[in-house]
Image 1 (cartoon, rainbow, N blue to C red):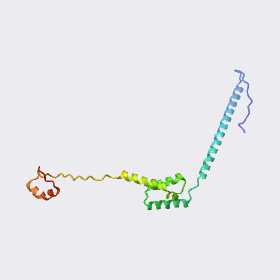
Image 2 (cartoon, rainbow, N blue to C red):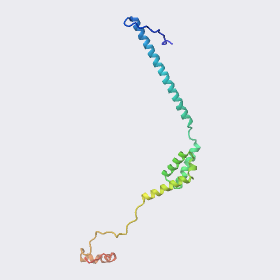
Image 3 (cartoon, helix red, strand yellow):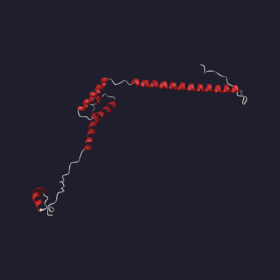
Image 4 (cartoon, rainbow, N blue to C red):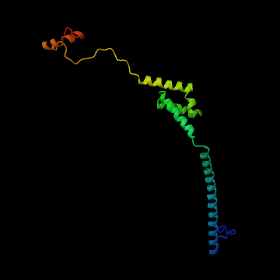
Amino acid sequence: MENDIEIPDLEETGDNLSPDDDVEKRLQTEVVRKKHWREKFEKLNEAHQKLQQEIDKSTQEKPAEPRDDMEARMETKFDLRQKGYTREEISYFEAFAKGSGKPLADVVNDLVVIGGIESMRKQKSVEQATPAPSNRSPQSTAKTWAEMTNEERKANFGSFMQKGRISNE
């Protein structure tokens, strides 16, 4: 190549370098520097090409999911929804299928997964449970028997007798 000029090593004679020797020494330094960077570039370029080949291989190894398999998964998910499973429970089925490497249709009948979902349902029902109401009688803000006038007592006598609210006040 045009840049691969070999220049013989110069003997260093100290301060007695002529201008031509100085230029020749600088030229030799630049040639060596250029050679160094070219080698470094070639090494990096080779490493880049190897990595690119590995990336290409890894993308080729993972084929796209076949259409039939995707349709089967969608049908299974639909069947699970029809059986009353929630989206969260279906995602639990999918996660187990992915982790075990089994098809979703096989995982649906797995007793371990079904037991886990039943456990999740029980835990949710416990968390969402409301306590039973107490048997206390309702509190009224109405006037007591002593606070009522005679007319109000006549009008409300029947309701007070039913509730048993008349006391010696």
